[in-house]
Length: 233
Image 1: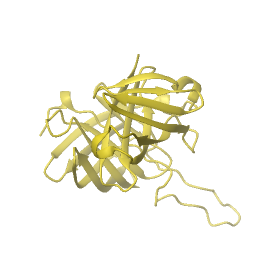
Image 2: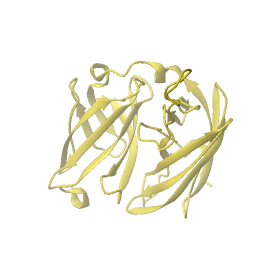
Image 3: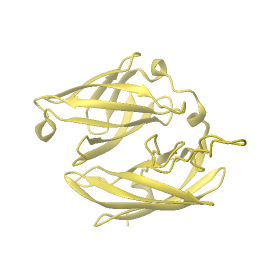
């Protein structure tokens, strides 16, 4: 089991959830329900974003030669004060089964990430008000460097360009559909990007503070995924 000091966790439950429920359409119809654990939850090592539906993205710092970060992506459900889910975990070129489980209150959350052959880790988190801010491409715009050395430039209109050595890429970003403070993005990789060359991905970017953004992405065919932290410079 990895030590807490090298663990960062990110979940994002975004708009394609199978668990989004709608009212019955008659008198007293309450309209769409939201995921009960929605919010940005974090500690000094990382965070969890839970939005109005049940798709999750998880980010765990591994710091190994195989992969620096483990990305978890799948579907979550909630019952009372408990949350759980299953999906895929990505580490380098490996794709294995992954799960999440935990509990939450209005102010705190405790979750466990587990993946086949990759171990598990439990973290405690607190709810942060940045989640409730309106997403703004103007505020999100800027130049960022990933912990893996890639440079990302985001414009106020949502354009993305960047490079990592001889690998260049372009894409677009847009605010979340539910008006909460995270972004959806898509990227297409250029000819110098090795196994990613000519391929496209989609993912989420979640501001943790004014300088730090967590991200997770996977190829459109789901075969590869990656994640990390962007720092504004």
